[in-house]
Length: 187
Image: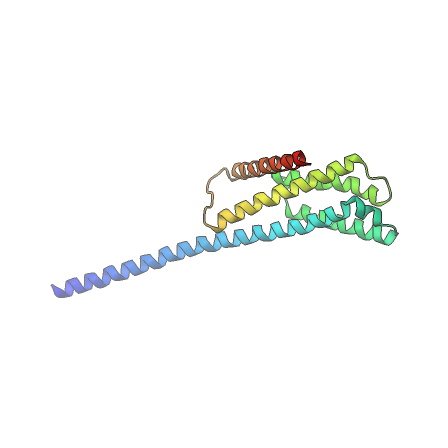
């Protein structure tokens, strides 16, 4: 009888050990997957900010007015076009949020290149610049919010992840608009 109890104890311990290993493996796999996705999002967000800063830098009216030589102008145009190309490779035309970002960047580029070549900076140019800055701010803030949620483990699971992105984007946009309205009222 004692042998049967010993054998049963060993078997139960063995089965529990195997189940623990399987469960740990599943948890580790999910954790690694979330970590890789989060790191990719963080890298993409950082790269977006870097590329946007190039476009914003060269679209500053003071910067445009400082470009006097053809070499400076060509460098500026090359940097802007390179940043635009990298943005287009990072984002997809099938997602509405990505399309908005790419469209704002392209609209600004279309006004920026003539301004670099000496055309006067128009009001439309300044409006497009502000729209691009706003889109980048809202997009990267939304991405940062999602990164923080994933980092602390509050991932959102389901078929409507695009809808969830839009909800997060809309919340960030509303906050951005409210904050900028308050700044405008203070001036």
